[in-house]
Image (cartoon, rainbow, N blue to C red; front, side, top):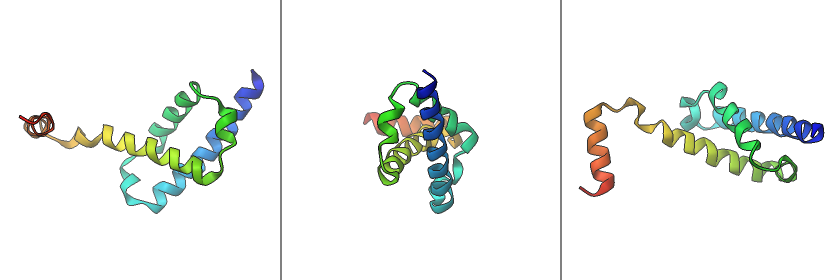
Length: 96
C-alpha cells in the first residue's frame, strides 16, 4: 500500500511539472488555478493505477493532463455568463 502511495506522489510531482509547463506555455490555461486543479488529479489517481500511468512517457502523460485541464476549462466556461446568457446558450445547445 505504501508503494502505491509513493508511486502516486511521484506521479503527482510529474503532473505538477506538466501543469506548470502548460500554464506557462499556453495562455488558454491561465484561467485555471493550479491549487484547484491538482486535487482533481489526486482524486483521479485514486481511481486508476499509478503504476500504469508512471510507465507513460512525458509526452503521453502531458496529453492526458491537457485533456483533463481542457475539461476543467469547459466546466468553468459558463461561470461568467449572466442567467440570460446561460439561457440563450442552453437553448442553442438543445436546438430550441
